[in-house]
Amino acid sequence: MSVAEQAAAALPAPARQTAAGKVLWHFTMSLDGFVAGPEHDMGWMTSGISFPPGLVEEYAGTTGAVLGGRDGWDAFPDVSGIYGGAWRGPVFVLTHHAWDAQHTPGVTFLTCDAGEAVRIALEAAGGKNVEVFSPSIGRQLLEEGLIDEVDLHIAPVLLGDGIRLFDNPGGAPRRLELVNGGDRTAVVNVRYRPAAG
Image 1 (cartoon, helix red, strand yellow):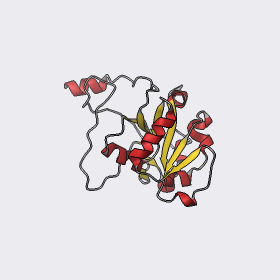
Image 2: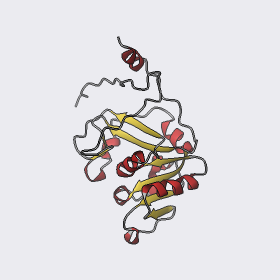
Image 3: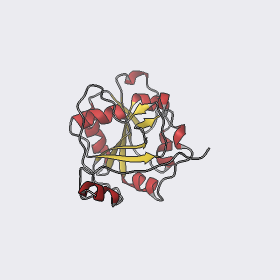
Image 4: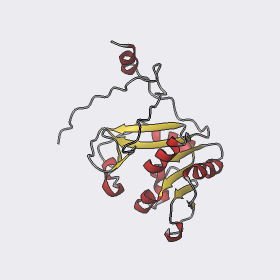
C-alpha cells in the first residue's frame, strides 16, 4: 500500500470548525458534485441523509455572516432557515440587479465585485467565519485567492443534474490540499453501495 493509500485509509475526521475569521466555501454535496438539484432544488437533502451529531450546531456557532448569490436567494429567500433556524446573523446577497430584490430584514444586497463583498461580510462577521453559499461566487473567490477552506459534506446520493460546486468549462484544474491528514495530496477513499428501494 502506498503512503497516499495508507494516509487515505486512516484519514482522521476533520478538526471541529473554529470561528477564526475564515472564508469558507461550505456545502453539502452529492457524490457526483452537485450542491443543488435543477432550479436550486434542495429536496434531496430532506431524507436519506444523516449528519454527524453536533455538526449543525458547530457551524451555526462559528458562522458570523453568510454570502450568497442572487439565484440561490431567489430560490430560498427565507433566511430564518439557515442551519435549520439555529443561526441568525447578517446575510449578504451579491447581485447585478439589487433594485428588484424584495427587502428582507437582516439581508443586504450588494452590487460590488466578489472580493469587496467578502471584505464587507468579514467585517460584519465580527471575527467569526464567512460562509459562502454560492458556487459561482466561491469560484470567483477561489480564483482571487480569497477562499481559506473548501468545506464539504459528501452525501450518499447521485443527483445527475443540477448546480455543480465547481463549474469552470475550459479552465485549468484547481489543486487543493487536504487539511485532515498527513499527506495533503492524498486521495480520499469512500465506498458506497446502492441503497435498497
